[in-house]
Length: 384
Ligand SMILES: Cc1ncc(COP(=O)(O)O)c(C=O)c1O
Image 1 (cartoon, helix red, strand yellow):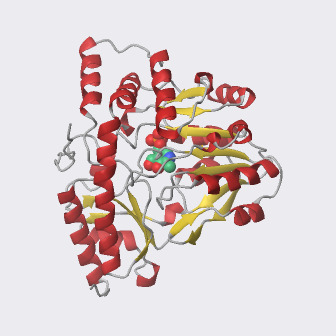
Image 2 (cartoon, rainbow, N blue to C red):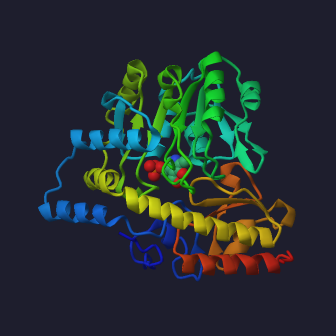
């Protein structure tokens, strides 16, 4: 079956955080990481059936969902986590906060590879812990955490590393050998790794494979908390369903103790949607990824035309660009004035950069990129 990603949906009256930011203004929102695609038909059917049941009392994740997640991991990542390692969550951001509050040697700084998704910093700050930024390096067109740079930043045993793979905002998908090097370093220095893998299924080329951090080795599994969700891949973020995979029973117990009474179980409809997505959404996801890949090439062509420094994402629907040379001051504000809402790099730890979300239909993308082109021309950048 062929799915239609060209269709345009009006989200202006749907309580969308992405669209309400610019309500009443002619600004195309290409910022927060949700996409413009309707969820897979199988997910919609499962939700409709559940809504028709009409009773929405307290929910609880079923054994059948756990089995669907394990099958997904085996099929997509050649990884076989135990069902007992799963801890269900209402979202990944609360889990980041919880990890920072409850785990790692709490008087040592938290290692945060930078730039990164802003809640990584916010979680550390809110917990009253110190951030140890670790700059990512731009090597061969990819932003990544180099082992030697991480090693220099480590200041004691038992430190917590907040890792993100695939990486938001740069779109890097770490290769197994790169992860193995990082895992070895983590073992050598007894680093605890919280690996946010929410973008693990948004791979832009069919030959790419996601490697969960915990799948690298037994030691990596013991010292890691892997966070996953169907929310980006299937555009279900508003349904509040995610999970942690924590192989080590003691670590899992500490995590569960810390979450008790603070984090609810996932939303009932989120559970239904997640299971339908994992069981029946594979084809839809693969087609979406092909669509996104074509979008990513179109975005790259625009940046190239104007000589803007960017990196080609291997995963995610995010494009990360360096506009520092333009001296715009408020680059995000400048693009907004020209009708397109991008994410400002400053909260990611990289002022002067912007992030563009290309998870949308081709015609919305054309419109957004045309507005970006005008913004660049008016900033004095000469396109070819
Ligand atoms: C890396 C990363 N982690 C977590 C989230 C948000 O997770 P949740 O909506 O489950 O809290 C996002 C959303 O953009 C993200 O990019």
